[in-house]
Length: 125
Image (tube, rainbow, N blue to C red):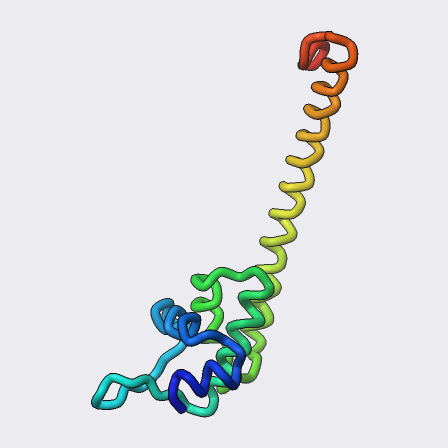
C-alpha cells in the first residue's frame, strides 16, 4: 500500500510516517519512481509505534525495542525490555517527587519570608 493509504488506515499523518522512516522505525520499499510502498503488516507496526510513543517512549528507545517483536507478536524479550523501561520511569518519578518536595520547602520558606520579613533560608543548614 502507498503512504497515503497507510496514513488513512492508521490515523497517522503522512509526515509522521516519513519521520518514522527517518528514525528507522518503519521500512518502505520504493518503486522505480521513488514512491513508498508498505506491506499489510505495516498497519499493525505503525499502531505499535503509536502505542509506544503514547506511553512516553522516545523514538530511540522504540528502535531498540523493535527487534523484540516477531511478526507483530510480543516476545519475552520485549516484555523484559518494557519492564526495564517502566522501572527507569518509576525511578525518575521518585526523583521528581523528591525535587517537588524540596521545592515545596523552598516555597514554604519564601512564604514565611513574605509574612514575617525573616530572611529566606534563616535557620536552615
